[in-house]
Amino acid sequence: MTKKNPTSGIYLDAGLGKASQKRYQKRRMALAKKIGHLSIIFGLENGPGGQNPWTYLDTRIYQEPLFIYLTGINQLNTILLLDPKSKKTKEILFLSPKNPNLEFWEGIRFGTGTNEDLEFIRKITGIKEIYPIDQWEAVLTKRIKAYGKNSKLGLLWHEKLTEPPKIIKDSNFEAKEKILILFEKNKWNKNHIANIAKTQWELRLPLDATDIKNTRIANIKTANAFKSLLQNIHLMKNEAQARGFLDGCMQMQSSYGLSFPTIAASGENATVLHYTKNDDPFHKDDLILMDFGTRWYSMHADISRTFPVKGIFNPLQKILYQIALEANLLVEKSAKAGLTIKTLNEICWGFIEQELKNRFIDAGGKMSLRYKKNPHGVSHLMGEQEHDGDPFGEYKNEPMQPGWLISNEPGIYGDFKIKLNGKTYDQAIGIRVEDNLLIQNKHCKNLSTGCPKTIKDLESIMAFGKKKNNSIQI
Image (cartoon, rainbow, N blue to C red):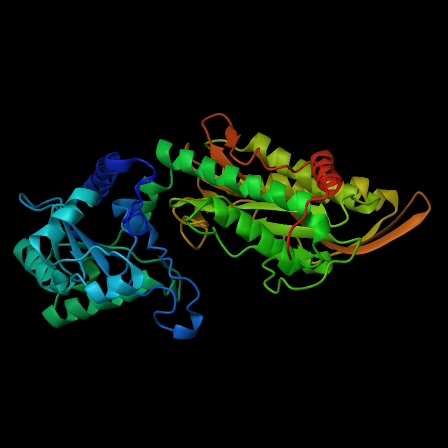
């Protein structure tokens, strides 16, 4: 009988077991050394429905990405203090008190209390100094005063220094507000609060071997779910059924949740980039665009595939799909360290624009795209967040580094009409083909290779499913 792991929901060991302690400790030491002064990192304070109870849909907590990167701890009301200058205590974890009533309702939680409770936390996490969370302000105040009024405090928040500044008002913003109140109360200089955003991204965006392994597993599980969908799509009548089936297949393989809400957009709906309705019926000539992925520990897969509901692409769909697919392959061939995502964008959209002219317009086709030039970026960074890196996208102008994980998602969205072999085809079509690429020095590795995307493979798997006549209850 497989032994149960009571802490799997509140501590993500990334599959390393006890060895995860050293991994997280190494990350904390590296960040503290790079910053060079006192820093404080706040975990998530409110979970699903915490501020708006009517939004409560799932008890799963998705921790603040830097906090999970440094500790593996996946529960609410957590704070980490890093102090590289201290000769005694270089890291302190603050937690809520042990709460038996909460655990009766929601299961085991790390919490301060008895020596036995503290030893349990130390054994799992490897963090030695653990204080009640209501002491964080007093401890931080004491340390700042000890270092003098000119000492710096590192803190994470997301802000672009434009006029006016652009600020992401997330949990990190709320943490900064608390620190500002503390500084005002003590009449400290708020200019001594240093933003550690760039520093922490430099450390955590290049994935280590464990993260790469877990991302690969997430992609494999996501691909397996998609293959099951292809074999059963002939039994489905609408977007909700396709989405529900795919989500179920992914969640059966992973307890860590989905990377993001799945998109199932058929026909004209696929021209809406972040389509959310997911409830329309299929029409026999529809293409269906699905954007989906599952997590494995704290890593993600993010895959998009487009395929015909009836199992066979019509001639118009083939032309457009092949252009998008070849753009995907061209980006994969081009991506490597030293190149920028901005350059990948130019390669991708320049190719699509030229090939639409060569293969569609010059063949007598007429089109009206749903965008002016580029519908979206061909790539975004991935890591602890499914969309990682600075939220303002400035990383897209920086040379890519070995170990970066990026998406590769060319798309075509618009209204198309053409006469082929005596028959006129006139459709609103959205197509996206997305993989996950691991950047290397001279090339990249496609971690999504197991997910079928050629016309031949997609049609073959759907035909096999029809032949088997799979039976699902809907």
